Amino acid sequence: MSHRTRILALFLLTATASLHSQAPLAVPEQTPPEKIIIDTDIGDDVDDAFAVALALRSPELQIIGITTTFGDTETRAKLLDRLLGETGHSDIPVAIGVRTQANNSFTQRAYAEGGRFARATHPQAVDFILEQIRKNPGQITLIAIGPLVNVGALIDRDQETFRKLHRVVLMGGSIARRYGDLGYFPDRGPEPEWNIKNEIPSAQKLFASGVPIFMMPLDSTQLKLDEVKRAILFQAGTPLTDALTLLYHEWGQETPTLFDAMTIAYILNPKLCPTKPLHISVDERGYTHPEPGNPNAEVCLDSDPEAFFRFHIPRVGGN
Image 1 (tube, one colour):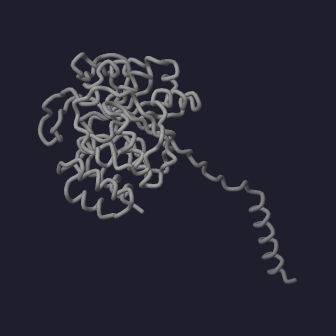
Image 2 (cartoon, rainbow, N blue to C red; image 1 turned 180 degrees about the vertical axis):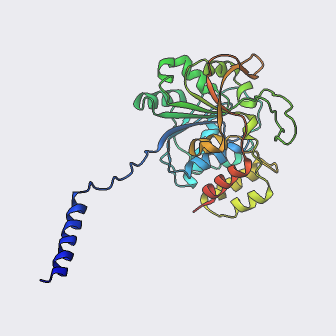
Image 3 (cartoon, one colour; image 1 turned 90 degrees about the vertical axis):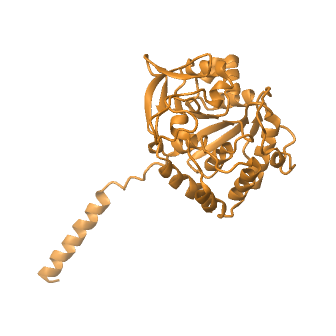
């Protein structure tokens, strides 16, 4: 063996030994999906359906169940039965909240009462949520996108267990902007928002509960799904977008505002709705006031609608 060959062999031997002596490359740990329960008044305005749709298309989330709240909660559950069945998610539990008196218009009743995929029975929402919290203490995010009837009932029934939620992500309230204020002109001031004003005592209990609250008020959720964006989404032709198309037409108005969908988008990408710690109180008229004191909520006061839709439309409309 020549001198040059011996040097080359020694180099290869040294390099091989060095490689074997190095620790194996670390494999990044995969973050487990976030466990969520969605509490919704789906069937009146159409934004709830777009929020549920985003959750269904997000592998980062594990939907433990969906519960219905406010008004005709049984028909809301039938709507969810069909929506989940049509899109291949019949394994997701649907639980029924306490029926309440409501003067709202259930615009998507025909879809709900179509009879397809209707389940014979549903668990009660409060029982279901408490059971899931006990099974998964500190792990469940409750997404509240309707009047807080079930939330108040949970606190009344078992406040200690309720406090074992990981957090509540809430669409509700109004800090500086009211309905119709899209941020193009100076703020016109707050007004009572639907989800808060329809269950004021429960909202007061929630903000006093000590559970971490992430609040998406009118200030950051007036997200207009205009004609161009609707066409892009509805032409995708998937079972999910076909269901949204039908629900949109049954809703019967022109341009939906996707208030509720921001809660899901925020969980998936917090940069879409940056929050600020505030102390929020709820008065007897349903106003949500920021006041001095220790923060009891992280509140999103502004968002970028274009960034939201660039996230939402490809995610919901994808195959």
